[in-house]
Amino acid sequence: MLIQGPKWCGKTTTAEQISKSIIYMAKSDEKEQNLTMAEINPSLLLQGEVPRLIDEWQIAPKLWDAVRYEIDHRNEEGQFILTGSSVPAKMDDVIHIK
Image (cartoon, rainbow, N blue to C red):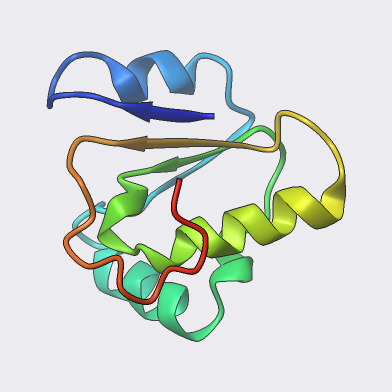
């Protein structure tokens, strides 16, 4: 599930209510680590109880392909919830675009 919209409209709050695990990509004390992990091995960021909320996924566009791959190979519904308030700045490296 992809939830997009303007800042402060309740995307994350709504998703938090149904998610079982969460990663906040833009959390100030973890942002650089999350971005590095998204470049090196994004599948590690996808580990966790499902549905897994990935908040502000768009700061690491490569997560899109990693999520798509996991969905295809897990063959189960309701795996991930992606929330984001802006369009990814650079989607050049993404293989599967909406």
